[in-house]
Length: 578
Image 1 (spheres, one colour):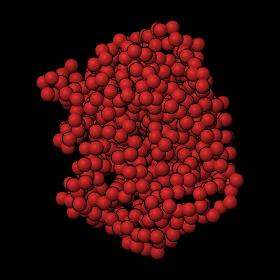
Image 2 (tube, helix red, strand yellow):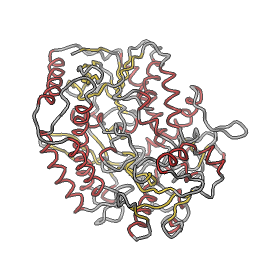
Image 3 (tube, one colour):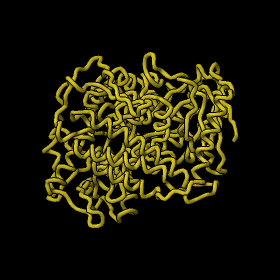
Image 4 (cartoon, one colour):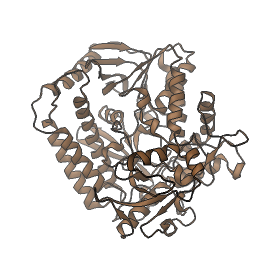
C-alpha cells in the first residue's frame, strides 16, 4: 500500500475540480503540492458532456438584463427552495468566470461585433447563456486541462477510484483509492480535501449521464458522517434521445426548436403559454409525460417507451450547422435522423442532482458548529443550495466555476497549516479499507452485480420519476432495502487486480444503492409538490410546512433526517407561473 502525502488533494476532475486546482495553485504562488485524483482520465470527466452553455450577466443593461433579474429567475426556477444568499454569490461571480474561461482559451461563439453571444434558456427572462456551439463543456474542460498542464506543482492521478475517506472526528485526514492500472491500493494523505465528484443520476437507468456518475464522493461523505441535503430533488431533462437517453441540449429549444405531440401540436401552450418550450425543465418534463399519459405521444416499438417529437425542421440548416453541430451529428449517427428534415424522438431522462453534500456558502461541509475541518465540496456533488427544487439550465456550469474557484482559494489559504501526521489510527483505517477491497475478490457469492444494478434502475425509473406517489415510493423503499440486504452475496467474477472494472462496478453499485435509499427516504417524507418533486397525494406546494431543506446524516440507528430553513434575502415565495 503506497502512501502519498500532499498539501491539498482535489477528488474529482470535472469543471469544478480542475477550476479548484488551478485557483488553489495560483493562490499559493504555485508553491503548494496539489494532487488531482480522478476515477477516469481527466478529459473523460462528465463535464465534457455539457452542451448548451454557462449563464451570466455579461453585458448589464443589454436586453434590460442585470444580476438582480438573474437571481430572481434562479430563485423562481428553484420553486423558492434555493438559498438566496448563495444565489446572489452565483450571479455576482458568474460573469467573471466566463471571462476567466475566455482568457484561458475557450472559443466562445461570438456576435458580429466581437462580443460573446448569449442564447435563450428555459426559465431565463432574457438570453444570458454564453456558449461554444453545442460543445461548451468540452471546450471548457480542454482549456482547463491545457492550463493545468502548465503547473508543475500539480500531480494528476488518472484512473484512481476513491473508496473511503479517513477521518479523525470531524477533521479529514485523507482517503483510500484503488489504482485501476496496477490494482494496488493507495492512500492520499492531506489535511485539505476538495470533493468535486459530480452527481449521482446513474441511479436511474434512463439518464443523460455517463456510466461514471455514480455519486461516489457523495456516498463516501455520507459514510464518513458528513450531512447530505435535499436528496429528493433530481432533475429530469425534458429532451433525451430515445432509446439511449443521450442528451439533446436545451440549446435546441433556445435556438427555436418546437415540442410536438403525435397530432403535430405545440402542446406547451397548455402548460406554460408565455414561455412555451422555454419554461423551466421541471414544467416541460411534466408536460411531456402528461401528453404521453393522455395518449398524445408516440410509442417506441423496441422499448415500449412513450415519447414526443423535438422539431428543428423550420430552422435554417445553416443555423443548425453553426449552433447545433453535435446534435446533428449525433442524431444522424445514432438514429439516421437529420434534424433539418426529420423530427427527433425525445423523452425526459434523469439529468442533474440538485441535492448533494451539505455545504455552507463558502463550500465548507456542514454548518454552524457542525462544520467539518479541512474538507470542501464543489460542483454537482455539493448542495449550497443555489438550485433548490429545480435547476435552471446553464446555471450548473456557473455553479461549478464559481465554487470551484472559491473552494480552491479557501483550501489553499489553510492547506499548509493542515498537514496531518501519519498516526497509527490513520494507518489502521487505511489498512482496514485495503482489506475490505481485496476481500471482495475472495468472496464466493451468488449474486450477479449487473442484475442487481438493473433491478435498481427499474425501481428508480418507475417509482421516483417525473411523477411520484406515496405507494410507489414505499414500494421503492422496500425493494431497495431488499437489494441492500442481498448485496453482501454479490459476486466479483474477475479475480485479478489489473484494470478490474468488475470490482470497480461492484463498489459503484454499493454507492448507488446507498444514495438511492437516501433519495427515496427523503422524497417519502416531503409531503408536498415542489419543483422536480411532484407527489400525486400532495399536488400543491406547501410553504407553511415545507419551505425547508432536508438534511440527511448517518447515525448508529441508520438514517437521521432533520430540516433546516431556507435562507431568504430579497424575494418572498410567490405563485410560480410562466
